[in-house]
Image 1: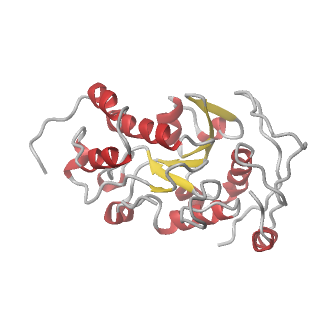
Image 2: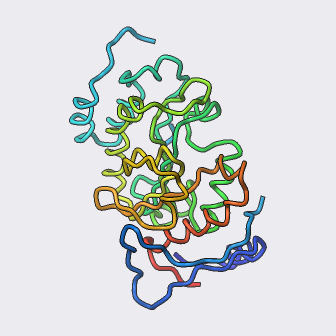
Amino acid sequence: MRWSEPQRAMLREMGLRLWRPQTAAAPGLASPGTTGPSHAPADEWAGSIKPKSDAPPIAASGLALTAATMDWPALQSTVESCRACSLCENRRKTVFGVGHLRAQCMVVGEAPGEQEDARGEPFVGDSGQLLDRMLRALGLSREATQPDDAARQVFITNTVKCRPPRNRNPTGDELSACQPFLQRQVALVQPKVIIAMGAFAARSLLGSDEPIGKLRGRMHRWRGVPVVVTYHPAYLLRQPADKARAWEDLCLAATCLAPRAD
């Protein structure tokens, strides 16, 4: 991706140094357990698809087999009518995902909140605005910037597609029920890298209960796709000192994307 002068100016205003490849060759992936490249950002950032019944829940195993063959329209329709767990009982809208259907970068969050449930779109409100600024600093966007520009857009989704009551954490059963949908979304997008934001995104993709602090800063893989774990924007709004570490994670994810010139 090419960095425009406005993007350079924005990064300079935030006190962030531009990412530069260490060698002319395409950067390789760090093995699990190794640390990614070092970056020195400031402590702060500057301030598509759109998406009650007595029917018994669908068995996760059967849903996995069915979802694995679905195209985008069938998958979205199945999510909208899904009753595989109890989250369907109180939802207003399902939150399927937004962005480019073949984006190079895929962002996976945790669970929809109240505003996401109302709009049917992931990462809205303050956390969504912060995510948009984070992505924009890397030249990425959830919106179409140019026709069919998969290199500059992302696809954004969540581990579960319905809001847990009172914004509680999703349970293991709820994560398992939605896992086939997430797996199929990854298979259809075929991203070059997945950014897992938050502990439940990491758990769903990597099967790990380790804290984010131990998982971030290195490259993981899920079914052959590189995965970078980082903090959820909602957490960063409460703990702004960790924005510097999240910027390092984004720079690590950027090494998997198309080459760019400064």
